[in-house]
Length: 327
Image (cartoon, rainbow, N blue to C red):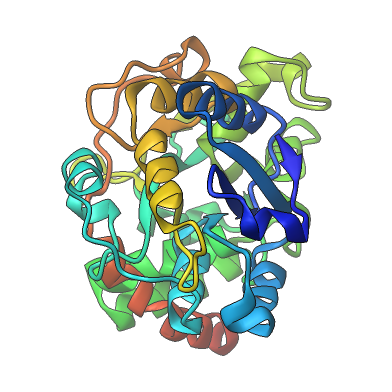
C-alpha cells in the first residue's frame, strides 16, 4: 500500500482512498484487499471535513475513488456536499441491511458501534435503562458525556428526534445538561475515565472504546475494569443506538470499478470479521461472528431506525443543542 501520488490517476490497477478512519488495524483491510484482487491501494488520511473540502476543491480533477469516514453525520455531510455518487450494486444492496444504506445508495455502512450507558457498579444500583432516563432529575450531577460538537452525540440526538419527536428530544437534551457532572470535555475514553476518577457515576460512550480496554491496555480504564457496569439502553423500546462507519464512491472517481470492488470487499465476511477483531466494532453484515472483546459485552437489541431518516434530522439536532446550552 502506498500514499497517493499524481501518477496514481493513470494506473488502472489501483484505487485511491480518502479515509478519516485513523485506526492502525485498518492496514490489514487494505493489504488483504490488495492480496485478493491485485489492486494497489493508495490513500490520503485526514479529518472528514478536511477530506470533503479537498474533494470539493479538486472538483473533476480529484483522484479520490472512495471516501471512508465514521458516523452517519459525516457520511450525510459528504452526500450533501455532492462528493459522492449513487451506485447500483446488487452485492452491497444484498449484504448491507437496508437501514444501514443511504436511501440513494451514495453511502453504505460497514461497521457499527453501540452508544451505550456505563456506570460505576460499586456505587450505583439503579442505573439509567433508556436514553431518556439520562435526563431523570435523580441523576443530577452524575453524568459524563461529550460536547454537542461531537458527531456521535449529534447522531444520537437526531435518532431521538426521529423516534420520539422534537419536543421529547429537546426535553431530553435539557435534562442531560442539568444532570452533567462536569462541562463536556474529551473523548469517549475520557468519559469512562471520569467514572474511574469518581467525577461521575454515569458515562455515555461507544462500545468499542470499552471493548478495546478489555482486549488491550487502555490507560486509566483497563486497570479499573471491575468498576464498570453497562446498560444497552431502551431494550424494551427502540433498542440501542448504533453509530456507523461507512463509505461511498467519489463522484468523479477515476477508478469507479475498483472503488466498487473495494466496497464489496468491505462487506465480505473476511473484512467484516476484521472490523470486529481488529477494532472492536460490530459487523454491519448479519451473521458474522464477533471478536471475544466485543462478545464479552453481551447480546442486545440494536435500534434499526433508518439512518437516512436520522441524517435528515442533524440540523434540527444542532438547533436543540444550541437552545439548551449543551456546550
